[in-house]
Image (cartoon, rainbow, N blue to C red; front, side, top):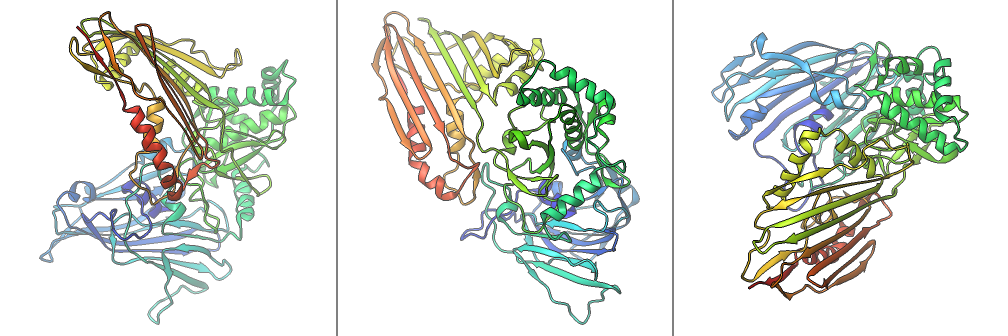
Length: 626
């Protein structure tokens, strides 16, 4: 998965070929990238990479004047590195030993799973536009992640690739299955030398134009050019191997110890309902077991025994799932780990590979309930948005299920402005988040220091083009579960300067987006002029009320017309009314699609409705004072 790491961290993803290439970065050219695995029957391998790229534009020197070799510090050994800068006149500038750095990969410290990696950073000397940067290195993996198996997932970054070849020399006893899109098989030539007892498989990247990655697009791996190879016959075979390899030699990481059983019974005392017991245990794990990076031991990807996780009070996602499974078992509730993607990948290659799975959650079959015990910001009973509508590989059965597409979630915001004759305003903003969105707000506020909350008000006003100050009322920020509430309310009050230009004619905006309000949801959904890629389109249920109390002598010259529309899954209503000296604007926007993602055709169909809503959101109230 080394090349996949380059894709994920070095630039935007690829896309289908289009009439106009809007994505390929001309700043560099990949002259060659030959990636060659020699795999042994144990699943161990030797990887050799021969790469060269030319710096075409000066702006690429800063970003591409170094090369990153990603390796697992427990399983891998970087056994050789040869690199140099080749000048246009043919002069070679050799790499000095001190120009190879070694450090922890920043992304692995926050990764849910499978990225316990370090980086060898090659800093090329004397780099300038026109130079070719050449590197050849070898990595030996002595202990496979899955004994007796091999798998890999590759794609290409957004540059012109002249010669991108992937080679796999496999033992004859280990046939390699492949799902290739945009990669073409390369037949053996008489010059190819294959190790004894091995069979060679090789593919060449087909190249072609690239579309830019659009906002909120699904992962490029869902639709783009990628090569998945694996010795696993199917995903059930993969699940068996994963479960066997992640459990310690004692047999099961999820066996409840006496301490786990006692704690589980204590936490569920008085709760007769199985769902209530399940939620109580999941909430305890997410609040009390600290997340740390993945543990990869001498045997590969391994989960700690649940008793060890409880004693340590930390672990990765596998450890959280193992502890929760053990606690559930202690109170008679069966569960299983489930592998999912926590990013924007919604499809899996036909060939089983670890590349798309990067997270483990828990599934309770008897309740048809999914839980993420690592999600500090997500109350049990809900899932983080990135896991909704995803295929889940259930480890106990090796079968697939689908995480929920929809879950209860609603946002309500009320904003009132009392405007003085000097144009200043006193304001109060009240926000209520319910369902899945309540706990993220509660956690964010709970972790914001008291001294910083009022500063937040000033930043909010600046975002609205206003100057002023105010007070942040955090409301009740206790953890959920004490009163069973999944609703959270907070408010901000204060004053702002130059809110309305008086005494002459002036216009009042009717939309003031505060912390993910209705307007932000609409503009996020409609932020692309056109789309060529499927994109994430979560459900929305938002309601805003904005009121203005006008000073005496100020007349309302014009109010916008109300809007009401229903189109597919979009429902929108707005109204504008006078109440004595006040103006009240009410809006409600809901969106339900039936899937977690939308297609370009879906987007074209919803665009007229979105444009009409955006016009309404930009409408103004015209007033005049004496």
